[in-house]
Length: 123
Image (cartoon, one colour):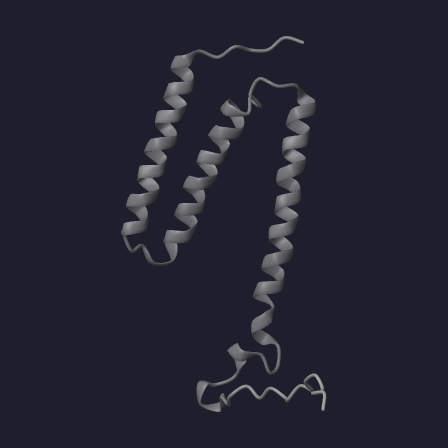
């Protein structure tokens, strides 16, 4: 089985790109972009993950079987995210759920813990 040998220059340039993207992530976190902060941070993280997978994990020059398993892993991640988001997004309409109750209707009371029977004392 032959392996593609990559140059140190390529590894250093990928490392520099990862450092630059990390710096961009930090700078974007300091700026308030409203609802765009999370998608932008996830996009940058996805780009960094792609660079790591392709070059440091040597997937770019691997066989089709390796690509198939990488694709299957991302497909499974998509299934997990879809199921999680479907659960999260469907909770707002449930009756009696906290988001459907007006704040003035919510009453708080201290937690009542029933007394527990203790060990019997010898006489």
